[in-house]
Amino acid sequence: MSTGNGAVVVLRRHAWLACVFVVSLSVRVAWVSQARVTPITDFRIYDRLAMGVLRTGEYGGGYRLAYRPPGYPLFLAGVYGVFGHSYPAAGYAAAVLGALSSALVATLGARAVSRRTGVIAGLLHALSPTALAYTPLLATENLAVPLVLMTTVLLAGADSGGRQARPIALAGLSGIACGLLLLVRPAGLFFVPAWALLALYSFMRRQWRPWVALAFLGATAGIVGPWLMRNQRLLGAATLGTNGGGNLLMANNDLAVTGGTYEPALRPYRNLPELESDRRMKTEALAWICTHPGRYLLLCGVRAVRLLGTSPDPWAGRYLCPTAEHDALITRSHDGRLAADVDLDNERRLWDVRHANDRVLAGVRVAIAPLVLVALALSAARWRALAIVGLPALCYLGGLSATFVQERFRELADPLLAIPLAALVGDIVAGGADLGPRPRRWVKGIVALALVGAVALLHVTGRTEGWYRLSGPAVPETAERPDTDGQTALSVVRLAEPATQSAAERGRPVEQ
Image (cartoon, rainbow, N blue to C red; front, top):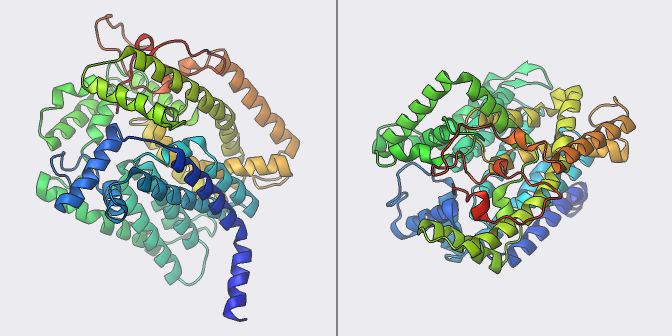
C-alpha cells in the first residue's frame, strides 16, 4: 500500500474523531471571537504572574512564592511571548485545547465503550455551556481538563496489550501529563490514587503490572520534583502549594454551611509567613474536623450534592453571555468591592444577568445530573471496561467532598462522566447495549425520564434548596453572613423564579 493510500485509510478511519474536533473548535472559536472578558480575581493573578515571567525571567515576583503553582502562568507566558499580551490570543489557545479535550473524550469513550458512545460524549463536551463559558477566561480549567484526559487516555492505551515496553512507555507519558496537571491544579492529586491503581492493575486483563505503575509514578515525580525542590529551597518545605490549608479551613469551621468559602475564617492568619499560615490553617481545620465529626460528615454530604447535583457553576453564570456590556458590569462590581465603593445599581443589573444565566445553567443541570446518576448505576454491569473513567472521576469527586468545593471544580470530572452519560443516551435513543442489555431500552428510558421529571419538580418547587446547605448557627444581623461564597448553594435558582432581587438584598458573594 502506498503512503498516500495509507493516509487516506487513516483519515477515513478517524473521520468521526476529526468531525468531533472540528465541531468543538468551530463553536469555541466563534464564542471567543464574540467574547469581551477582563480578567478579575484568580484570572487577574495568573495574568500578572505570566507577565512577571516575561519581564523578569523569574516566577513569583512580589506574590507569595508557592501559593499559585507555575503550570498555567507559564502556559500563559508562552502564549503572550508569541502573540503579545493579548487576552483574545489566550482565548483562542484555550479554544484549541477545548477542541482537543472533546477529541480526547471521544477517543476515551470509543476505547472504553464504543465508537457511538465516543461520538456522543465528544459532542456533549463540545457543546457544554460551562466548558464554553470558561474558554475566553484565563482559567486553569482550560489547561487542566486536557491534561486530565490525556493522562487517562494514555493509561487506557497502556492497557491495550502489546509488548511490555509499550505499556511502560505509555504509562510514562501518562505520568508526564499527570505531573503537568499537578503543576496546574494541585487538586489533581485526588485523581492520582485511581490512576496509580489503574496503572498497577489491569481490570480488563486481570493482571498486576508493577513496572507500569513505577513508570507512571516515576514520570509524575520527575515533572513535579523541580517545583518541590524549589519550594524546599525557598520556603523550607517541599510543598506542592500553600493554599490547601486556607481552602480546608474556609470550608470546615463553625460558620461553614455549604462546604464552600467562608473567608473571614482566614483573617487571623493573613499576616503570617506563607508556609506558617498554611500549616496553622490546616492544623485548625483538622482540629475542628476531629472535634465536630458529625457536622463534618454533613458538610461532606453537602459538598457531594453540590458536585453531582443541579446547582449551576456561578463563574459560568457570570460569563455565559461574555459581551462587552456584561464584562463592564462584572469588572466594575469586582473593582468596586475591592475599593469598598459598591454601586448598588450596577450590582442590581449584574445580579439580574447572573440570575438569568443561572436559570439556564440550572435547567441544563436538572436534565444532566439525574442522567449521570442513572448512568453510573447502570455502569456497574460493565465496571471493568468503565473503570478507566469511573474510578478517576469518583476518586476526584470524593476527595473534593472530603475537603473543599466550588462548582467550578467539577469541570475536571465532567468530561469523564460524559462517557457513561453518552452510553446511556445511546442505549435509549439508538437501542444499543453499551451499558449492558439489561434492563431493556424502554425501561432505561422510563427510569431516566422519571428521575429527571422528579428532580425538575423538586427544583421548581424549591424543595432541593436544603440539599445544598446546612442550617448555620444564629448570627447577629451586624455579623458576617456565614459561608457567603457566591456559590449557588446559597441561591439555588428555581426554574420559574423571577429575577427581581438585587445583590444587596440577596447578600453579595465573597470572591475567591
